[in-house]
Image (cartoon, rainbow, N blue to C red):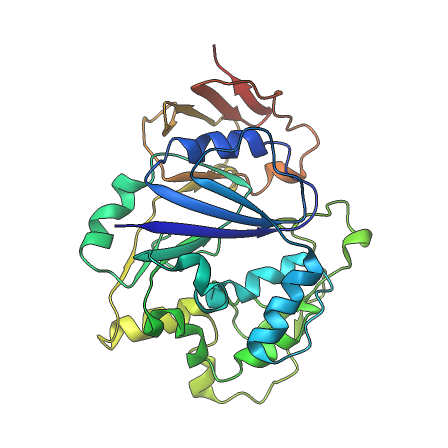
Length: 307
């Protein structure tokens, strides 16, 4: 089964990008394409294509596909368009059985053992969290029907045209938009930064029908269709994050990556990926300069090469 994951990233690379790419290298049966306005990092793995694209060119691609005038106030808005990547970038996924999207603020473990059995069973949608479809990693069968699931929400064009608000359309929107700050107002100036501002603002189309509310994001759409037997959905907790440990008051967590496997040091539990949700905002979190290694550890202080 062939799988390709697309990531759109505009602005400076994260400080651990070389660690991220190393974990891609150890998943040779999966291909990635990263659309970015940045120069390719040194020695990218052969299964990762770094494709140069300006933010303006990305906006033009969206505008042309949806026949809208899209100017992204903040690149974080890109998350809302991810459910449509299978259609927008269909040329990137030609010849692949599955396509997906992912964040960059994470490192991968050994992905295929977690997902390949479900791909072989023909699951239409595969998610890595049990209770909802997570925007940081999701996979879809590469068919016209599955690529167009997002259109079941009748107001998707309004979500796409409102570039000053982020709705979480790729996971759980609840018909609520959070106003985005301009990148220059924020400490972080890259796509994965959560530059969301309070208070929460109701979206402009408040009079949405109840039937539309039930399909207000890709999580609800896929869940409802699965309940009706119209698609096959597989979701299971396969990942972990620094936020997961914080919520459980575990300050001294430690994750090890060795020869492609990602494990909790204390419990030995293996993960598909580890998500650095909070660490990217913490000035005390400092990844060591990368050098070629088959082992590193992650804890609350940073990423540390193991010799």
